[in-house]
Image (cartoon, rainbow over all chains, first blue to last red):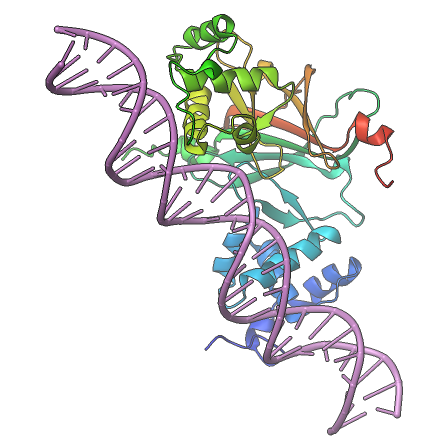
Length: 156
Length: 156
DNA sequence: ACCGAAAATGCAACCCGGTTGCGAAACCTT
DNA sequence: AAGGTTTCGCAACCGGGTTGCATTTTCGGT
């Protein structure tokens, strides 16, 4: 029997105050599941995928997480990054306003441990684009081997 | 009855000389199907996906195209770009050698017509990355509305 | 507190791009 | 022409993502 997860479920009691504010600031009604999801994303210290969240929140249905993420992206609670791993990753959008191009930073995908790193301090360098094209979003992905994996030899 | 597509099939007779050389230069044995695939990619004047190729070469099996692309990528006949559209795109790698970071250029994905453009003249600006990380490849994607779609109003 | 409409959620099924196992066909060498 | 190797077609599979629909929860009005 899956847990109800609703009002009377202790799981609902995430660090509500902070996360509630985070959602309300972006005009998202803070339901129990949305709080669970936003808290999971915020406290994972990396970009997480839908299936990561399925594991973390194993009582919550995949489609609920999916629709929650969809809503979060639309309301700029999180932004989606495509690291080329085959599954889109999500991370909290810290900005008060929408994520502008300047907000966007570089991401690094480690081909060994399959983690995605946010280089939050490195902004995406802007480029001149041809006349007539208008840019809505940018994505700068680096692929390679991360610090941890470079350090420890992975061939026992 | 599917066409044999082999030695005696007229479809095989693509502009062979050029494409054969292109494959042999990268140490890929030029089979009938590989010539069809490389020619299709080269003559599509944009980055094409596996399913694009399935349509263009509708007599060739999907898995054959897939394995051909896999081989091409390994031998640097083409390079793969992930435009975030959900399907990886491929384009001819013009360089004699492997595609280095400097070879890589910016891509633009139009959210209206779903085409991927190569801005071949715009190289990916390089950035400083943290100590310990090593980069193997880079991908700079812009999303927005292309020149054509901006020009013609798409709401009849 | 109760009711009904609207929103949110769970479930199950589906879609589609990508991937694989395996037998058949083509190729190459002798 | 025979035998081993490579390539190819077929069919099935996989996993991330997506959707339709019934159920539950939420919330404003009474």
